[in-house]
Amino acid sequence: MEFKRVVVTGLGALTPIGNNVPDYWNSLIKGVSGADIIKSFDISKFKTKFACEVKNFDADGYLGRKEARKLDPFVQYALFATDEAVVDAGLDFDKLDTNRIGVIWGSGIGGLKTFMDEVINFAKGDGTPRFNPFFIPKMIADIAPGHISIKYGLRGPNFSTVSACASSTNALIDAFNYLRLGISDIIISGGSEAIINEAGMGGFNAMHALSTRNDDPATASRPFDKDRDGFVAGEGAGTIILEELEHAKARGAKIYAEIVGGGMSADANHITAPHPEGLGARLVMTGALRDANLKTSDIDYINVHGTSTPLGDLSETKAIVNLFGEDAYKLNISSTKSMTGHLLGAAGAIEAIAAILAVKHNIVPPTINHFTDDPEFDPRLNFTFNKAQERLVTTAQSNTFGFGGHNASVIFTKYQD
Image (cartoon, rainbow, N blue to C red):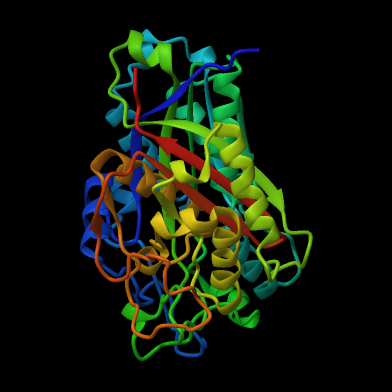
């Protein structure tokens, strides 16, 4: 069977360093940190007092107060980013077969704030179950693609992927497969997450997963630095419009890049810790390369998972060196989480956007906040520390790994007719 080709025709982003794609990209290239003291709730008793929050997002102004109250923030973020992507792609749904347009979306947790608020309200009462009728529809992780499809009248494949921090990369791979098999013409894909609240911050602190660098939040996310001490929580959404190539050409769509491969694997090691030698990470990158029919020498840039955790950064780097061999030293590697924080289920989407734009603009965004070399990392690797680098980026790979040992990787290349 001959697969159809799939291209990227639209992008949308709501991130801690930009509320649209141009602002997000410009902040990445300039090395802007999105971390600051948390403003959305009282953090005085919390171990970690900072995060990468979305800034200047007015849900009431965007949706109207009545509608906004029916939606958890992770859905609000999804709708906002998708609006930008739909406009960017030039999609006129009145002229398209909406039965062949789907939505495949990723979220690691879903409506955590809604769940927390409703349970707290119940616990404060007399035991009578007085729950908001929107409680369940606001909370469930699959509701974001549901709202997107309802808004635009899209009747193609519609579901959510949940694989912790790999969720939206898994969504992109599923969308890619549905398109190259000819099941759909267009799929709106991506992910959203909204976990900067009491439950999210408290829960991750209890796991000792978060940085506690409260005296210097802006530099707290330090991937590959000797003094890294945990990830910085982030929130937001990223939307990528994937489209079958001939369909995109027929409607005169602009094309950012071509998606050419995806890989999936499991660590089968621990519920939160990666395999110490990066076996799952190596396997998933191998799978993506095989799927794309590419060699290690074809990859110019890897947007790594790079969360700023002691174990995770090291295991991923070992996987790259073991798989790529001498080609590893020709790569640019960077972790944009140093700027955005870790958006969990939305991380794969916004990092795929960074990889796509690196391919389009031939610029590799940096890994900021590097101060001290870690002798455990191979000094010959180019981590793109502290400053963006211009180079020809023909092909870029984006890795995401999640609790539970879930690994996903996608590859984008310059489009050639």
